[in-house]
Image 1: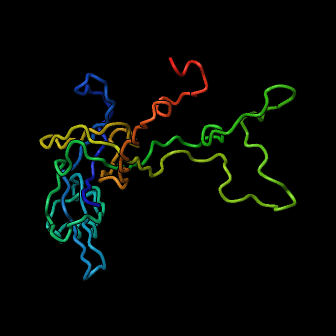
Image 2: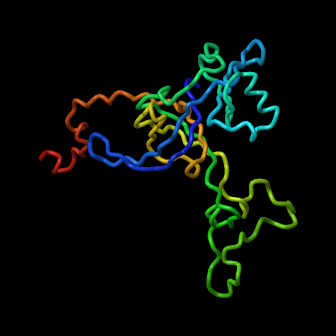
Length: 239
């Protein structure tokens, strides 16, 4: 990846574009992030940098964690994340990455932990259907129902939908575009919604999607009958 940063979701709002249309956006406090560790292909087998985000007081870190930051000579950080960035070999420990690493119009992928919904049934969690509510359905209208045949295979196949913990999972929303960048406020304004509640930590990186090449317009047929798409046998075609 070319660019990446760690941030915190502030919330959603809406802005107006040049045409006066409302654009729903998510505001993210992106960085500043500090390079805490640098990995090289000669030593670790690949090039990457470890970024730290949000200052942390020392008493909330254990001794190995404090030693990790003391060795790098940087302030204690609450969150650490490793990125394989292009050009990371030119970066050094202590370098700072700010929101202005991105620019307006960039396409990004945002990764975060989705909102937890607790223990949910099969209808809410997977969109399953209810059982009929008449003719003696009994108190099982929202139950999972049959799980499969009994004698053969005498087991439930992996991946069968069922009740369980919903949400609180790692989710990535791809191909969002950046509407505004404010380097002074360390702010990224991204079109659309990103996973997680307000105050949750997210990772923003350039998108892995590739824009499809626009094909040239098809040549216009010279024959007017073909260009119009009408049936030449109809009387109305000559009007």
